[in-house]
Length: 521
Image 1 (cartoon, rainbow, N blue to C red):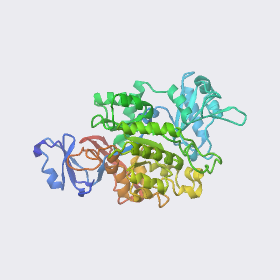
Image 2 (cartoon, rainbow, N blue to C red):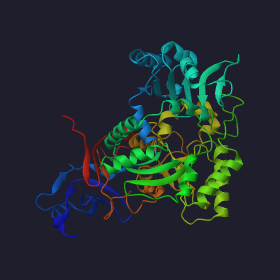
Image 3 (cartoon, rainbow, N blue to C red):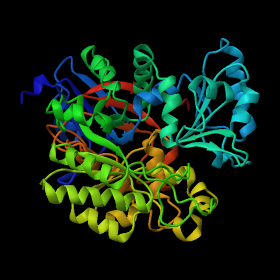
Image 4 (cartoon, rainbow, N blue to C red):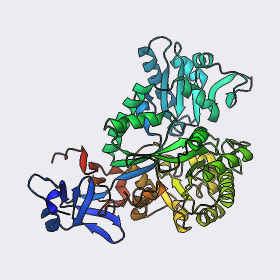
């Protein structure tokens, strides 16, 4: 390469390349959005011609751009305009926020609350119809639990949506009255009724991209709605797609994909068709994940499977035969067992050498499950931030699972030790890689705890493997895209405080897309 074609150099840094051949360097040169050279400061600065952008990083640590392997990215951006209940400490505080929004809304307009989590409230119970009737008496209202597998609606919403005794997975009390609590498939009813139009989606995507840049996220795997693909395509065409997107397609679109002969990996460096997103069971927070023993705080309840065995096997078999990657949501041990059985049967019928099928979440795997995954080269796509949110000695996981099962929950250490490829994402709960990395490194149980190196790799180098893009990104190596994050402190040196580390600068394709002002001394 001619040194004078260099567009930018970044030097005076501690760059963790995650390249097995060269772990750390001082500087990088970038050309046409790719890394043209890595090396020491003198070597890199010599490659900078007149007019080249030069960035002195002040000795700060640099890591590859974070790849979030499990998001609901556009929905997250849309939800920024709704009532964010994630930080409420009581149900009364949550309802006060809903009430304030209702007072501002025109009569009859929807009031939408998002991301409530009763596990953080003093009174740890689900929101009900009665709560929302009091706070939003003149508007249809819905409040979505953080997991997305449970929502609560008020009487106005029940009337508007036509929810009644024939609605599957709508909850009734002992007197036969609707409680307003909706689970699994029923959650889709208010979701569909309040679905954002193209303009709201575009604005939501823009908000989500800005958020991603502040957190050093340069690539995402999005489990999106079928209509979201056009939002991404429009953003790419207009030069506004500020993240690289692996678009996991909803299972309802399987036949359309097969009819068009579209398989995993079709697209550009910025937007590709990913895997087929398939739901096998529910969520632990909603008490709908399929488990072999009852929930500790809800005796008799063992969760649900979304599909019958024959239906699931047919779906997974067709996707595997059609050349699609599978991204199967399976959380409980029964859900995981069911998902793995279908995937293994599909591979036995139509073997594939490099399918990279994934289990999303994998919260309660057994040692036997991990053996099956290793043998069949199935990836574990997990969310370490869940431990930060609901782990510990008094968290939601303990309440749902009890003391014996909770130590087997989210066993990142055991996954890696078993030889299963581990990749990390956030599920937007919350969307913050450094918080997730901190949670894995400082997890409460030995079966969960990772080293800093392992946790960072699961969000960078290993994460690129989940989307077949390890030759494009994931390490800071010559020839790969120049996507990286500059950190305020070194996570290797501050392993007990990784969550407090800030992203100071985010670089995407060699361009600075976020720059945090240095704190005043």
